Structures are given as structure tokens and as C-alpha cells.
Image (cartoon, rainbow, N blue to C red):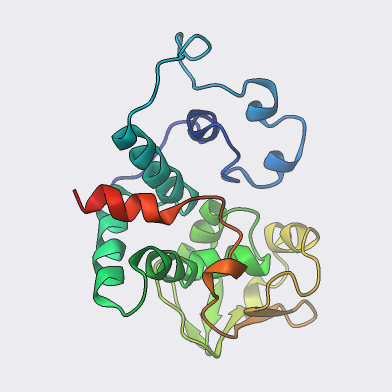
Length: 208
């Protein structure tokens, strides 16, 4: 399957905000956007052209897509699912993305980024309801329990990531650091999701 292999820090600079794609580095002075908060490329500093309505919508779609680490086809498929659900399409889209296993592993604190979460899942380090799951896009349901596999409980990557987690960070997830497990309590409401993006612009873009 195709995947993005270039520097992820360029993606943050392109969107002119932190997308938190690099784990702990995003919280330090080494984050490139702290030093060069302008688009990459030789014309990045001088680019002042007024962006069109379509351009604004496109940038918002790219931002959300990159935050969750999805390719265009994957993202569009989630949008099609969101349309078929009751409620606001934009909010449905964000809720679907939040239900992904790689996102929840990241939110719980077992990984420092969604990219790292996908790696850990693919390497078969997690159980969902006592069943091994190695599919990052697996959609969780309320009540599902995510556990670190017994043989993986000594992984430094997981323990180092957990150090940054504060208790009760999200009201739709519970974390038990002692047993290295977490529960997806409920699908979060849009107001509770820390996503600095306007998903309604994505709806407008795909509705053209």
C-alpha cells in the first residue's frame, strides 16, 4: 500500500500549524515550525497570494487527512460513511476518525504519535477485548478494551510515551497504567475532540 515517506515536518509547515506527527519532538524547540513557520520550498517565505475559497477548503481537508495519517482514498471512504449516518456529516467524519484503533492507542498514550501507534499495531503488540488486532483502521465500539500484549509490556516505546499522559485527559477514554490497558468508553462529541480544524469546509469541498 502507498504511504507518505517524505519528512512529516514539511506537512506541518505547509499547513502552518503543528499536526503532532513527530511525537515528542513536537513539544520541543526542535520542532521546525517553531523556527520556520512558513510553507517549505524556495518560495515559501514570499508567498503572499490571496488564497481562493477552494484553496481554503482544500487546505482544511489536507490538514485533517494528514493529522490522522490517511491517504486520499481512505479519507474519502470515511466521508462516504459519514454521509450515510444521521447527524452532521462533518461531525460524523471526525467521530469515525476518532474511533480508529491507531488514534485511540495514541490518545490513550501507548504511542507518542499516530504513526508510531500504527507501527505498534502492525507489529501485533495490542489486544482488543482479548483478541489480537493488527489493523490500525479497526473501528472501536463503546466498551471495547485495548490492552498491551503480555509479551510487549516491557517495550520502552510504550513506557516512554505513557510518561506524557495525564490522568483523565479525555472523558471518552479511561487509562489504567498499572495494567497497560484502556477502555474506549464512548464515541466522543465533537466539542470534546481536540482537533483544530473546520470539518465543515471538507463537506463543502466534497459537495462541489
